[in-house]
Image (tube, rainbow, N blue to C red; front, side, top):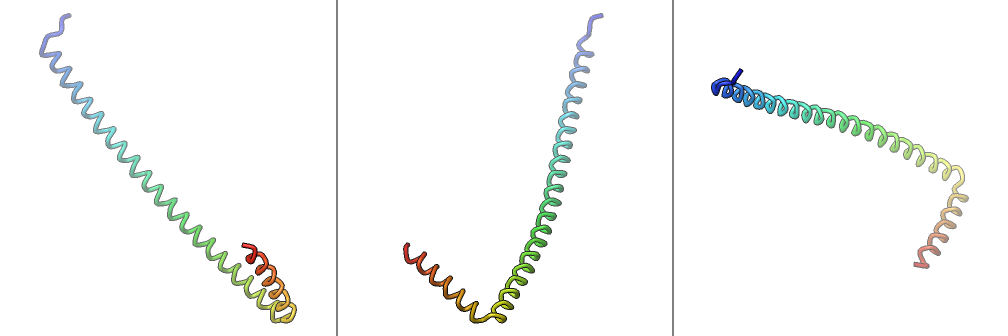
Length: 99
């Protein structure tokens, strides 16, 4: 069976249409994947921001409790606290004097 020119032209046109459809499908798939990636990135960013806010608040709370504890110890033993602060000052002075 010999293929005639009109049948060959139809097959070529059909192939061109199929390739065009394939390009459109691939473009749509690529765009869908990009959109999904952006969406997941936004979700991950929001989750990270929430975690950082939580950790920051926990650090603030711990810092505040530590300061309150130190203040309490200073009020309970003011002379010992003054002596410790003086000694620490001397040590730091010696360390920075070497520079």
